[in-house]
Image 1 (cartoon, rainbow, N blue to C red):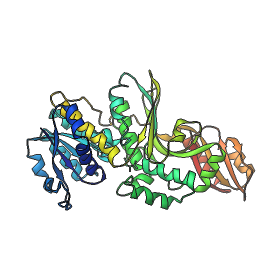
Image 2 (cartoon, rainbow, N blue to C red):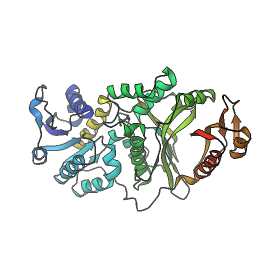
Image 3 (cartoon, protein in one colour):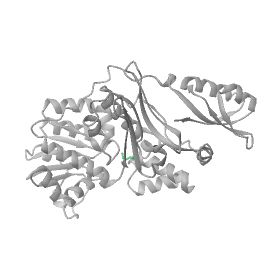
Image 4 (cartoon, rainbow, N blue to C red):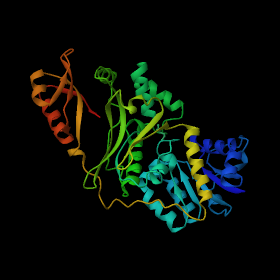
Length: 403
Ligand code: HSE
């Protein structure tokens, strides 16, 4: 009998327990013997649950139990989650997590500790919830250089945008619904301001390019400024608005990495990704585009990825998986200033100034002196300069990249 532990009994943690219960037979068949969750660590009182006797509040019970070989860290955050992960690895226990904040900020350090102690630190659930993306990048696509990654990486914001696009639901109501469904982070700011997607594109970039992309240095814009007016204008241009995380590799080996809302054409496969679903396009230099699609958030979807990593650790107890990236000293992140994009803009002011100010590709007839414009490609810094200039004679009310 294999013994494992779960640290955290929130949405994902309770889901991990449920997956081990629900699929006990299948899991035993795959790993070769039954797996028992011996402990669940949480400070709250869950004694009324049928498995209430498994709960512990003292981390050292798990740390000091040699029977426990694999631990799920599904607590979230970078405080206790970091300390307990480090101590588990140092105690010779593999750790599997859905904690993208911890992987994105301290992943390289924890991977090194895991290597030093001959155990695994695995994080399939940290990007795309139930979608397999980490393992395919590490294994199936390993022979490729990754030229581009572009994805809808946050379920909460995709749910909100879908509600705005199809049902005219306000931003606030859609957010409440996403929280009730258990999609949102504890503090939804991380979702709506793009930080969650930023952590995820950093993890994918770390894997793709082999050096750390620091979420604090990666440009990140959320969806809080998107209005129903922009959604309607995008529709008239044959587009929908989606929050994308992107990494684009340059010929010199540097890369742009960023999170921002984009207008994407309705023909794009990403345009039809709705509600809590995520999709990730990975462009390998040998494979071309490969697309991954599925539930990017939610209890059982995410829990199944954590549980599968735990099974993998059980199966690879003797020979650890080699996963590693550098500490960021290669400075691969290229500043956004030179990234070229076509833009959608909403401008109130004189038409001639707009036509002078931006490389207009198409321009709508004005409504109440407000123009909707689609531009040719323009570098980010140049666009910012031109917006500042246009704001001297009018008001640029929105500027969103077009993919
Ligand atoms: N809050 C995250 C999301 C959860 O909405 O995508 C999954 O990472």
